[in-house]
Image 1 (cartoon, one colour):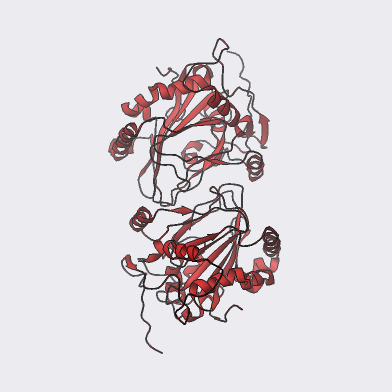
Image 2 (image 1 turned 90 degrees about the vertical axis):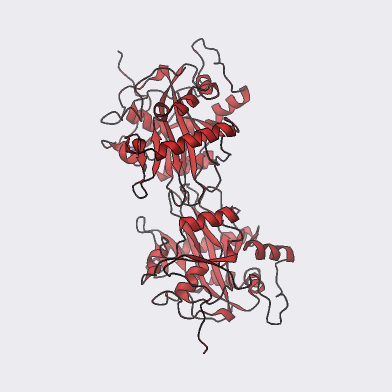
Amino acid sequence: MAAVTDLYPTRGTHEAAVPRRDPVVWPSGSGAPAPGPVDADALAGYERDGFLTVDQLITPDEVAALRAELDRLIADPAVRADERAVVEPHSQDVRSVFEVHRISEVFAELVRDPRVVGRARQILGSDVYVHQSRVNVKPGFGAAGFYWHSDFETWHAEDGLPRMRTVSVSIALTENLPTNGSLMIMPGSHRTFLGCAGVTPRDNYKRSLRMQEAGTPSDTALAELAGRHGIRLFTGPAGSATWFDCNCMHGSGDNITPFARSNVFIVFNSVDNAAEEPFAAPARRPSFIGARDVTPVR
Amino acid sequence: MAAVTDLYPTRGTHEAAVPRRDPVVWPSGSGAPAPGPVDADALAGYERDGFLTVDQLITPDEVAALRAELDRLIADPAVRADERAVVEPHSQDVRSVFEVHRISEVFAELVRDPRVVGRARQILGSDVYVHQSRVNVKPGFGAAGFYWHSDFETWHAEDGLPRMRTVSVSIALTENLPTNGSLMIMPGSHRTFLGCAGVTPRDNYKRSLRMQEAGTPSDTALAELAGRHGIRLFTGPAGSATWFDCNCMHGSGDNITPFARSNVFIVFNSVDNAAEEPFAAPARRPSFIGARDVTPVR
């Protein structure tokens, strides 16, 4: 095995921005564009902005079935006791369930759906596997958001993904409003990798699922990026979806409204970009957060 | 002096909603509508919804002058040391300055401006004085918001305002975006008084300027109000303004963007509704938070 080159250094003594060294939309092995359900304009928009939205990725009936399954999962004592469930300390409510496509056949079927995995294959130009999946329930009444971060920064530092060949989809199971802590992305920020300052503590993931610490950009870097790219807020009905590149600078505010925000979040990685050892962390994260099984989704 | 009747009981053992017992737009002493700059349609909207917006209450040049004055105030060591300044513990930045119309002649002039005080007189049907004024700087990068509350609930419980004859104006000194923690109001919520459960601790104001505690509605009450009325988010350029009734259920989310949100907040009370003793608190708040000098604005 050849020595691994770190194309995207991070968690050192200084914050440093470097240009992206990977395609955003990957060609297939033959060099031709990969086939799939995304039309050329939408794909060009994804390459330029780092995201694409789909107004109705799944139907209202499918949303209803997924919400029923989500309700079943968060009420299930076995799920609550599972290490893959994130439980809010104060209320004891389940806030997230990781690896939901292995816990629930209903969510496994969603992952295999051609509308879902087909778009991931098209963008990444290869077969894909699930690096991470989860359902999130942001219950309102003051639920905290997630501070600005690039997912790739974490997945590179803590999981060992070598290249930017990973795409996420967030599928809304409730309406995403301007007021209930919806996703914000800085369009075009995916073209710059921001290496963050600071060393990763052991078991960082236990804290960082709730609050960003290591891997957090400085105020100066965020002001510069937001000044250059602006900030786009994503709203839409249940069933709508946002696909976004692994290196988008994104975050969300808190949700003081009574309107809960639930979504399914699936991260597809190319089978040609399997996780190696972490580039900037003392140990691998658990495989329910960063998968080690690269069996392609079929 | 006659015994004071408490029309709006609060801070008892139970939360209880009662209908508003006061007009929203008050007639003048003669019974005729009070004159002023607000047209009949906008006034009817205010009566119905509890708020009205003005796209350009003050000009860009006036905004620039007020922002320069705000910058001067928050950099002034005498202001920072003043008990009327609220300083963020972590950053040591000035977050709010109370009674700003007594600290700064520039802001005093704004209060006296016919575009400002004229609207307050028209809505309240009488001469008015300033119950509270402040400038707020919400600096971004994670600045906390304010949880849902009715201002009147606090002003009645802690300052002794007997009736709902008070109007606030929030004038934007920076752009209010959908993403930077802008004001949210439940339209029509001003027609219901929500008496809150829980006793007011002594010196509650020292905590409640940062975080709501006593006077906080329950999740059940908020879900009911938001379900009935919905939630309106207020955005607009610098110089725009939102006038809102003292009993609107309102709040704001946090601001993780780098875009600071600054505004001037002025509370006008009718001279016929002067503060009495607090209805549900052990002692008066300081007069820079709840004024005792009812000299009309001229």
